[in-house]
Image (cartoon, rainbow, N blue to C red; front, side):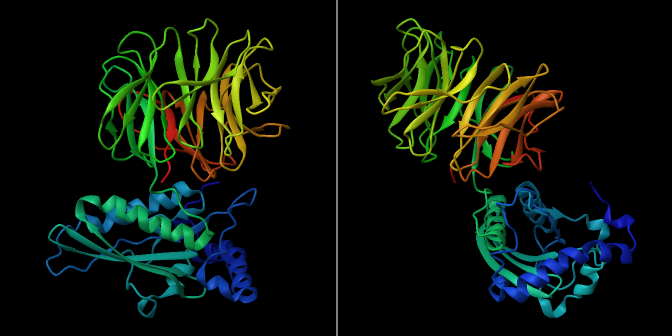
Length: 446
């Protein structure tokens, strides 16, 4: 339930926050080491309560006051990062009693003004611009105790201010959860802004979008390498769906598999030296592995059915894939060494697009009631868990490197765009706003 804090009385807001403040009191009283913030937020809880954080405008500490726009832009980036994390509720500035944020340090802050509006955490910041260089300082406070939890100073180039803010966001998330944030990760996806399907990359929050293909044809199914330096994708620029490998730094592109028929749905093995994909050069669409020169290493799956969409387990010993051998598309798991195959999904008449997380969960898209939704299931089987519902078609899930978040494409607002959510389905947010549609996300490592 969304609440507009400005509409509450000061007394009502203070009462609303009492229980949360009592939790913080117990943390500090029973666990003195919590002053470092490491056990503020249990990211493994089934449902994660959000902490209200107030982020006033940053102070321009420069003598000449250049780049005044950063006073709102920089806290805006951090606010969005914390919101996307699912652990925080950045508060509306209209609720602030001190709109300018007052002092930067504890000595000059009236914490009662922040407590009475329901803030549990307060982030203050200041910056200085000298030439092309940017220096930023932030301080994070526990409002209840009036105690500083984190203080950081960062230096960088003015043009890279968003990257600098993402670094600081990660610091905040790390100190409060004990786990690294995702703010410095990248995303690849398919977009049709030009009228043709091309591959694009961007920051995890949808900013800094740039095309990496200009095939003027159909480019689909991008997949990042585990080192974040390469992407494999399919393109129809020379006819059928051939598999290409692109080096992101150099821009070099080379054909990896151009055999007759299909060469689709590639995924990287955890060793970074092998790629699994579906090929039909022998007639039936089956799953093979190839090396980075395109040489066939092994036929993993051989069956009269259609076998597609391989996804390796974190240890590389198994693959999940989709097959219609039971009469409808379902997800199966194969042990690569002994070649044993077991069916994983039994619910739903059309299950596809498996994605295997580093935490041994498998996400997939399933059609029920005429629409696709995102589900997860344990790799050992069991009942599936539905994460999206009654919001159009939701497809092509992919995991964050740490397995705590998921990207997917959805047409819930009309056109397809990329959305992010926590692994439990909470905090669903749209991140792409580019012209046209955006689909088939692939999440790169940090």
